[in-house]
Length: 297
Image (tube, rainbow, N blue to C red; front, side, top):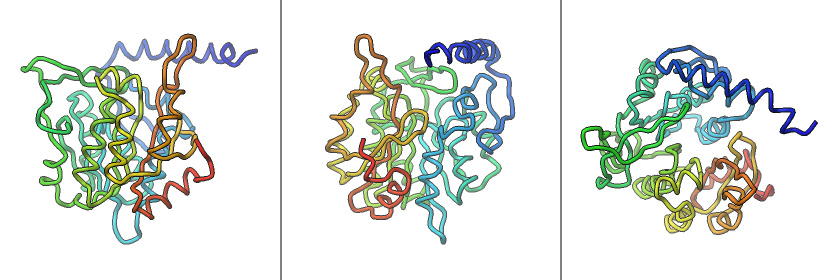
């Protein structure tokens, strides 16, 4: 039987289950996801996506690889959602995490999950490259949020990378950035990298051509911008967490065809990418251990 037909009953069950759960958006449940217990809204897709596979573990493994024996790894978690990434990183290694989340719906769960851990700080705001962002409101789908233009009285509070540095000096030597903002990553990540330029953090973000364009951003413009900031090496994973290979900021655009929608061909949803500064030997060693340089994209 063809794989698509063999998977059909499972897909139908998943979508039927999601339809039922979506009717109860405010029901709180406790779930163990890949060995970590967390509070979630019942409709959240994370338990379905994660299962027992590698989904999301690339970030966790990267944080652990960057950790040093004498100090916690410092992490900026942009689009922290319910705090699942923070919880899993802290389960794997000692860390100090700054979570930035703007959606009031997910903020409730974020606080439930992390407030008792003094290693986590929460900023209730939308991170923007500068202070010029128009009024913005949350648009939710399943377990994620994207942000769109809204009315002034519905606007979310905003914060810039420079404000975060001023407000949280303990993160001055930021080691790892995680960004998952459904299309805004390609503009946010360079702004974060520039603001923390002296720290040269490793940049881990969701790279999605379709959502970037929906947000009004050019997805390929991120690469020359990161090159200007001194970044070079790129490790790439599929949206299920499987390692796809290595490339560079110079070469990656020529390899992004799988992310483009074409007539009769469905694009891969997105990639996870980790981008390392050319002068960051420890960062390069960390991604070498996860996606060997010999495995070319």
